[in-house]
Image (cartoon, rainbow, N blue to C red):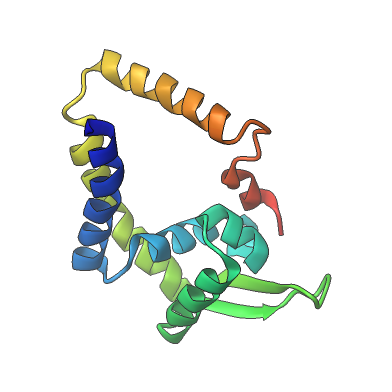
Length: 148
């Protein structure tokens, strides 16, 4: 029951802190963070959906909200007009940079601070094995960062 409790409560705790401190949902933060690490701060919406682990419909709604705030801009992909690009704006960059320290502190406090170094190593190994079982082909969403 402990693992289930962690899986149920951790996302809520992360979301609560981001909402309180930055006015962002965890999903929106993931979008901004993904774009902040992408070349030219730009990704195709389809690649960003994979990275953010959300459907295109959910991503489109979230990007629409971020666009209204001036943090993301959508445009046709000049290489292939069938695709839409999402680009992090300067204000979006400032937002994710401002949100990151509190988010990192929250993750540290919730996950790592109560563990020993040995437990952190075990957690890394456990996570690696779970990821290998969940994603046996190794198509981790982070590879979408390099897709434009």
